[in-house]
Image (cartoon, rainbow, N blue to C red; front, side):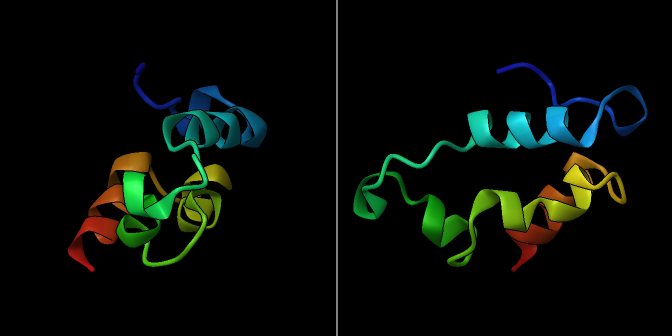
Length: 67
């Protein structure tokens, strides 16, 4: 998968689409484990600060992994 769009070079909608494509829900939590990774949150909610342009993708990812 491509690198995440930089905040300065993208719109909120482009960043939202990146998150949706990077972390697609396959509706089988036992199979993919995304729900566990995001502590029960939807990936869009977990990456909201990135989508809104307040923090970088990598910073948000680090916080998610640290939990």
